[in-house]
Length: 223
View 1 (tube, one colour):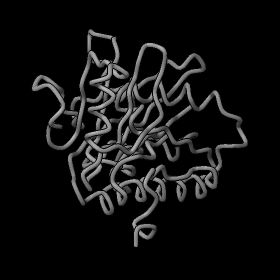
View 2 (cartoon, one colour; view 1 turned 60 degrees about the vertical axis):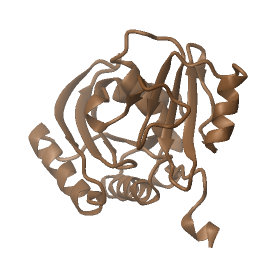
View 3 (cartoon, one colour; view 1 turned 45 degrees about the vertical axis):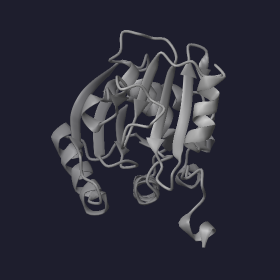
């Protein structure tokens, strides 16, 4: 099975094409990563074309994407492109929570497998937040710095690993790791996404089933 994965929900574009076996082992056919804030609207389709040509396949059998939370525009571009290609190619499409994907991708490079806290800069003075323990993930939350700090001070969240995007949060240690496109392990993200995909019902993965994960709603909701 040939699989196409892409993500533009942050200030980067990532496009990965792999050939996967039934036991989820896969061969990377093409991998592209670019830090391109505000350029994904016209670069994504071109990078997908290049990725498929490099992989020497006309179309994949499955599309996997990170569908948010993150940049409103980035999420819209990712989801719209994935839905359009899924409909055009008549193949299934599946979205994975961006926060989970990044924790999986950054955690693959970390020896310490303890609990982890990720705060994506959501602008408007808030963070898209997820806490991971060896038992699983919290919900993806839209939180103020004070709310996050309260969970840390009361030991409700006790991170061993601290990850963030944007500027270092004031309640983070200086040793925290900033997530960027270049330090995410795309192979781990893809393997995790495939596992989540195979847990779903096949008829739940057509282009109409892929929804953006804005958390805050759309900008229209706030006007």
